[in-house]
Length: 113
Length: 111
Image: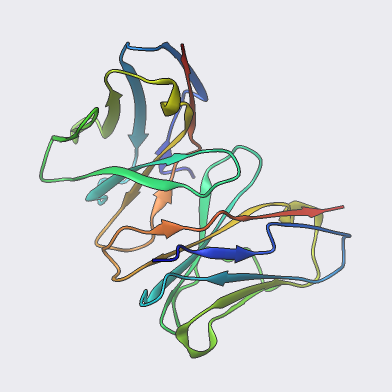
């Protein structure tokens, strides 16, 4: 069974530019989560999809961040326009049910210059 | 407001000895606790969990202890091996709602 994959693995952009991160969950996992870790701090919850619906987006920092999960399969997280403080590692995780173990992808390291 | 705290950024242990990683939480509503392990350039991987109805859960060399009155949990690794060197994250959740993670403790196991 393939794990959670994320693309790209690294992204370096300038302040004001747009970046789109992609996550492909494990097949059959209805629950998809986005997290962010900034420079050695805690892994912070951003949002949770159940299939294509946003179950909880309370962790989204502001309206520069837009997450989608069309068709309930892969998800994208767009940052527009990017700011310096958006730098960090963005993790995606998926689980079959809401109480099942979450499986994490390798993360996308975003650097905003 | 950090609800899950790992106050030790790093821990160094000799191979074969016990590693004890600690975690404190503030939200008494948390009913499920997890430990994840993370190697460089990889995502966190689930290690072990414990429900709030238990005070201990064991899986091979890994044991998690929960002290609800103190709002404290710990992960014991016995015996520690060099391959255990990684960052360990404590996490907590309530009824399947969003999982709250700590900042992690980097464990170094010296051969």
